[in-house]
Amino acid sequence: LVTLYYTDHHYPPVKKIADASETGAATNIITGFSVGLETTAIPAILIGLSLLISYWCGTMSGILNGGLYGTAVATVGMLMVCAYVLAMDTFGPIADNAGGIVEMSEAPENVRKRMDKLDAAGNTTKALTKGYAIGSASLAVFLLFNAYMADIAKLTNKVFDVVNLADVHVFVGALLGAMLVFLFASFAIRAVSKTAQSVIEAVRIQFKNPAIMAGTEKPDYAAVIDITTQGALKNMVIPGILVIGFPIIIGVTMKYQALAGFLMVATITGILLALILNNSGGAWDNAKKFIESGAHGGKGSEAHKAAVIGDTLGDPFKDTAGPSLHVLIKLLATLTLVLAPLFI
Image (tube, rainbow, N blue to C red):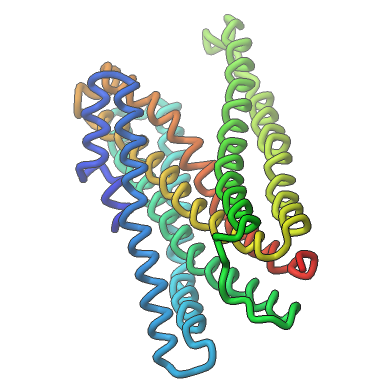
């Protein structure tokens, strides 16, 4: 419901971004980013309440480690509807690509209007599924973090149920955990930028061919597909190595307590940054769709041009960096749990 409120054009946040587009791309971006930052508040409270209530319910059961059992049940409960969530997630790209086909085939105006509405609905469903993903990831990572602490306690034969942030090694580990999330997001967004630049250069070269522009010769689509495929693989090698190597180095050099601080803060930061990127991207996209539906001058207006720029910024946010952070926090939690004996 919170994601719907912040990313659907029927509600004030997206309308505010559309209004800001009247005065140019800069105000569109400023308003969109402020909406993204605002979206962290209610989800963080709801995730916190979910953990507290499920933990309390588990504790009241009276079984051993009942609190963790309660959060495990809550996590499984969220995952029970995964088939429906996957259906919602795939609806978005299908509607988006159908819209592209309608536009390229020069279908009648009434068909395009229908597809624009379906595309806007698809943007919202994609945002909803990302909100679901980060919620379920938060609960799952809390369990993995507790499993890591239990594993360390078993390996050291000592009680390990408190992470002391006043310890200098733990504090440094926590600081580096927060930094890794931002650095990883930076690499992901930059990968999109690099690949996009290569695609634009390839397209510009083809634009110089008069036959292609006249429609008598087909463009070389394969060249662009090669660029995007190679870019997707090559540009994510360094972030992948970073995510695997960084926690191992911290764990080996500063040991398991520092790594616990690293994991705790990286998880919290990853959840909040993913919310910002996912929701701001969805809001920017639907602000553009709202204007295209006829608001603020419709397609071709100055507000529409500004909204297109905002949407272009939002795409790597919601389609690349945001979803990849879900994977990042789960990977960090799993990696530290599996390699726990190295950090004693």
